[in-house]
Length: 163
Length: 290
Image 1 (cartoon, one colour):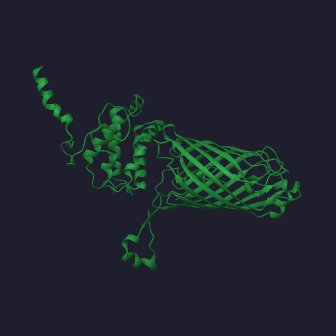
Image 2: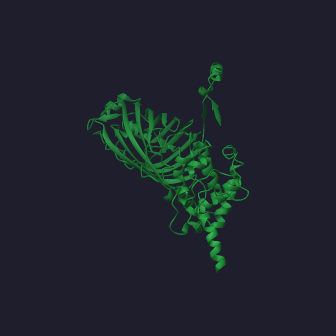
Image 3: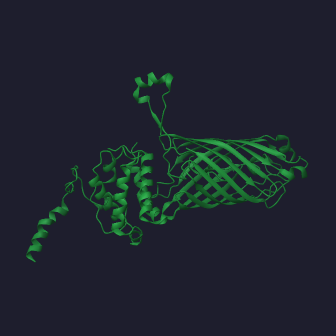
């Protein structure tokens, strides 16, 4: 009992920090405040959507697929050329899982900060949407559930597309 | 795909002024979001324009579409074909030619077998607010204002049946919203017009000569990224004493076969046209674009 309490006391400051949350294998990023609000959308209230995406495992497969495709597609290859794919995979999975009410916290930066140096244009954003649709198709997510999820992501275009 | 705005004669000037050497993009829109082409050439549904801008371009480029549309009715045959240009997903310019073949009706009315009314439609549309697809957190639809100038090539006949003019104009406002979480597209259009059967029977007439406000609506249900099914309604003026004019309805399916080709089929109820009632038939449209 004493050990658990000590462990909690030592671990506690980690929750309060606003230092960068990077894991081993990820590149350093400038300090920012960690908050679920950074995810850019409010989560679904029921678990229907999580089930439609086949839980956290389905989300994980979709993100792995998407991150693989964005590095191959000529429309998105430039946008992601300098990306830290280890971190991108982790934070995208967190973001999708958080929005789909999968019980995750989002620890990444907000949509403005993440994309401000990428110079994303509308056609690239649309290409990314199509690659996500392809990945959701391959996971077997129904078209209706895909659109419900995309409706949550859609307003982020205003923060992501900067020129 | 990128198109260099700088052409050979000014390439040196462009090289000297890199900031001027803009690259104009083509393509980039999501499938079906350029709409199909109406019988009058605007980006929209089949009978009524939408606030979407034709062509596959985004705000950084140009796009274009060409269409051929045929409507086969019990007593008439209609054909239209034309081109539209989209500029920076903001401005749309289009030209469409229409032919309305009266077949046996022409003979019955003493105009001659297969008498054909022709009409040219020059149209412009500007998107003024909103983003139909991406503003999913707002109620505000995408809104566009448009104007059409139309010219009928049978002025003498138009006058003989009680029409006032063989040229006319109309203006309209369209609001389009995609409710993505429900896979629905909704459109409402208000048109200020005095056209008889869209102008195929002229503009204004012995019952009424003035422009009036007409309401139009479309609904579409996205079954997949490439397939939209739905219906349309178009209210129409009734200006000619000789023939009652009815509102129009259709049920349609639009299929984006490839990124560049969209095929639309519809069942249309065009009511009474030039005293011949129950003009219900099939509509088929092919649109190609980039």
